[in-house]
Length: 296
Image (cartoon, rainbow, N blue to C red; front, side, top):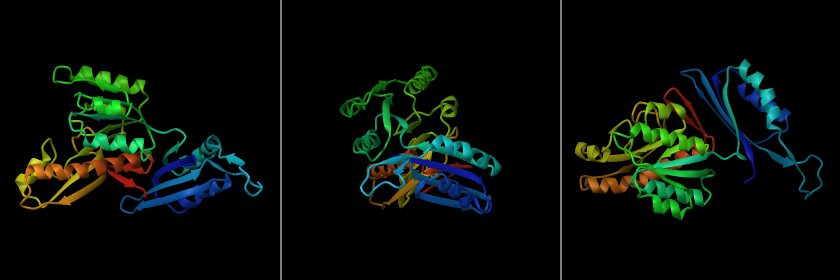
């Protein structure tokens, strides 16, 4: 795919916002590929995602010519910044020429990790994966198969602070942008979370906010629910309470035992986590309060 730029905006809602942004892009010769917006009328907030090509056929080129002209992102930033200040915009601008660097964490359950690595290898996840981190060796062979560096960092109550410090140093050394907890069964410290705000994605094996904690399938079975689910969300200091990105459910019956719930839940976990990671990589998510806007 050709290189593109993505601009994400959130600001107080008012008339003319779409026209102001699209007008500037038109003025600078942008070829807009996708544009979407959302208004939260209750809170008076406006959200927008616009994506445009960074290279386009040069004006006046003969038919069939391969000449291209590049969009000047730096010049756009200089012109857009005063407008953003005037309209009280919070904004992020990114280029697909600089893919995100994603670290994958897991413990002993490998189904989400295997799914993410397969999607990455086949090009569905357009990112770089410089490292896999685990407190168990179960994932080591999988990391070797996909030729991704593996770091084994065992953790217990006595070495948790030291191990987390090593993890943070490791992520810094690899210039990681996003941390994905693919069934990583450890609670991250506030210091770790603070370093990656809205950049740690977890998958929880229940339809949050129901059944938080370590054994949600057992709790769902004991409660006699007819639906089980899985949730991908950003990690905050409050366990299983961060902004929800994606959820899915499956119907069960009185015949299903805990083992059946776990088996069906694995497919849900794979799907919701891979969608969340892809949407984050594609810059389709905006957070506000404890909610997310996920653009199509």
